[in-house]
Every structure is written in structure tokens, then in C-alpha cells.
Image (cartoon, rainbow, N blue to C red; front, side, top):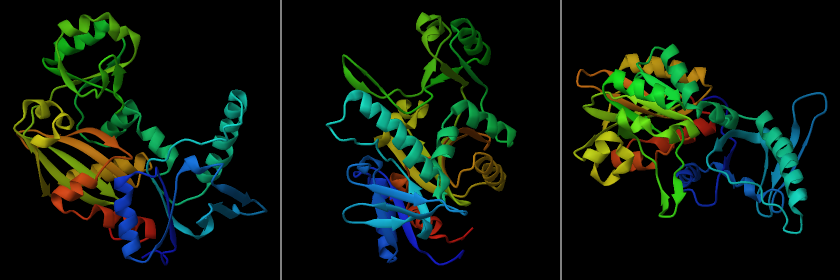
Length: 323
């Protein structure tokens, strides 16, 4: 244990079932938890801090019901906070100006303190797929051959050259059109589809198809590994398991030592204490790295496997070292 547990600050939306798991775990330990949404600032949350020849002190966040001194916090859990909520009497220009001040002032204060799980700046960097894929290769993890481009000709040549490829979006947001909202999943792409001139209108990522026996969602918390094998008989889920959750089965498995050491190096490189990583395991047993979500979901994995992920996160926020 690294020091006694003090209080834990959870920054997230009011509706966040994943964060609820961690709050419940901390409450069961009688740990003081202060849960705040950034949207509470400035109308329902006051902030103050003082710098006087040393670190920021008297750094208080206070609502009508709760308050926390950031100097007394053993861990800050950054989940899914929403944006600032300004007074409706402000004009559009005043709101824009206030938003900059809030981001640079309140956001800047939070950026200067810790300890974070994970620091929001590090989350932002790690979410860049080209950055994390390059880091994974540098750390020795096998990564499928990948092309990022807005050039249809290069896309067609790449897909032709690798034999079979998939298109993958860079982020998890979907698309809203005349048919409503829809997710964009990974999909097998042909050379002919790469003739689409719309490819030139934004960046796209194409990746060589890796034959798979199964996939793995690997959740890592401060060096503790929770690997879930994901199997399916669905053709849709075989390409992207997120497209058909109902067809999936999960099994808790061990993470190979080679993968553990490389993942630890990757997370250290990305300055992450938590990561939700996806792998394809080929028929020869080789683990292929696909991506790392620095703020990924994990509650359903805990439900399906019984692995104590919430407890590991609570340990990390309290300052325990159980690696």
C-alpha cells in the first residue's frame, strides 16, 4: 500500500453505469467518494486554488452538497464528463469566451494535479490510432499491416496487395443521416470499393485481415491483467464483434508473458495506468494488437467473466499497489 486511502474524485456524467461500479466498490470500503460532472461548472460548482511559492494548495471543488480539497485526493477517475454549462443569460459570444476561460482555467487546474486514472491529456493522445499503432510496433507488439490515407488509388493498391483487408473507423462515433443514427463498424473492403471518390474527402484506415481463432479484450489496471477470450459463430461478429454482442461468449484466460511485457511497455510509453486493449489471436496462437482504448468500457466483461476489474480500479484510486 502506498499511503493511506484518502478521498477519490470521480469525474463523469450523471448517468454512467460503468463509473457506478467503481463508486459502489469504493463505498463498500467506506472510502470517501466525490462524484462531479464538469457540466456542473460554473453554475453548480465553484472552484478555487492558490499558488504561493509551492504546489497548488487550497484547491477546492465545491457543490451545494459536496466538497473536496484536491490535495487530499488519492486518485482521480476520469470517465465521461460532459461539457461546461453556462448561464442562459450569456450571449453566444460571451459563452464562447467563457468556454475558453473555463477550459484553460478549470481544465488547466485539473491538468496540474493528480494522481489520474488516466490523465485526460494522455487519454487524448492515446486515442489517436496512428500514434498508438506506431507505439505498439515500437514496443514489439505484432500489428497488422496498416494504411491511413485519403487517396483512393493508394487505398486500392494496398487492398489489392494484402489480399484481404478491412476498413476501420478512427473513432467510436457513428453517423446520423436520413435513416437516423448508426454505428460504423469494421468491414471487409474490396479493391473495387476503393474506387469510391468519397475516400478523398477525409482520412480512412485500412488494415490487412488477420485470420482469427478468437479475439481478446484485455483490460489492464496498474499492471494487473484481465484477459477475456471472445468467441462467436456469427459472421457479422467475426469481422467486428461489436456489431453483434448477442452472439458472443466470454472466457477468462491468462495473458502470455510476452504480451504482458510488451503491453506494459506500451502503456508506459502512452503514460496510461488503465487500458482496454483488443487483440486477434491467430490459429497459430500469435496475438495481434488491434487497438488500445484509454478510457474503454469494461463493466460487461466483469459481468460475463467475474474478473474483479472494479476492485482493481478502486485499488488504484485508493493508492494500493497490488501488482
